[in-house]
Length: 361
Image 1 (cartoon, helix red, strand yellow):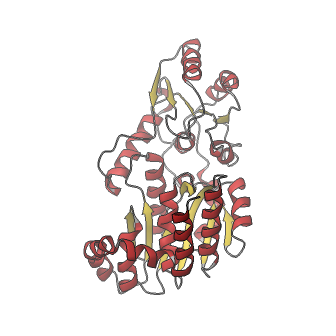
Image 2 (tube, helix red, strand yellow):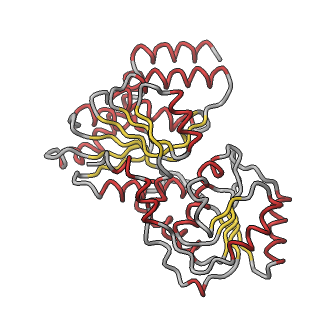
């Protein structure tokens, strides 16, 4: 770890991440004050639910998470404000317009830790700035690296998280739950599924019209399978006498994707999943999209194991199975293909979110 980064950590520990960021990028915060100030002014008469850190990139899993988060928050009585991107732009707005009764929600997903460090830093700005507000982290997967700098960054997050008296962390699988409990003993930590599993009413396709196999495979830093494995999966489709086509839960995005466009793309992707007779995927939200749309699925792990961790919530859903290796896929595919007219157990999943829903006003 370089000397400059060591000094940066030390200064942040003293000043707080929010103050440090405002010193460095006050111009962005001023722009945000102009851009978002009226939204806060228009909702000043009531305590608000403020959802932050939403995506504007091309990962539709993250956009589905944000869609599900907004659905859940709209069940409450409060006005909802939802913001994406760098939270620096919110800092002055929150300082000027927020009340102690507002609740800050941090977007969930799989970016807690060092693999997607910018996203973690966006959370730290808000946790540092909003010590008097309740803050709730939607279900996350936690993954820190093992370098000296990774360890130092973890200790810094422990300093920031631990100093907040009303911070509530939700893990979306057991491994992360245990990691959170160990890393953040001074914070409330609870376990619920990925928030997309709170979605209901999407398993409504005519099962007799489904056709072919959808291969939804990673091609990024979390990829764990090579092209030879993909070719074997294509061979499986031929053996089953079914056409196969590739898809992904990411889309190219040169420009930021708005919340409205993100939701439209998610619904279109769900339509694509509903059209398939079988999905084979190593993407977490490939598995979850299959589940909520009632689509038979065989899931494989990604590089950090989060698909397998989350499968624990789905292990009793008969049309979704998990393969430890590519060799297991053919037999499991035949098993899930025998499940006719699968229905997503939305009532059961709704009960699993009780600890989170109890905190939403």
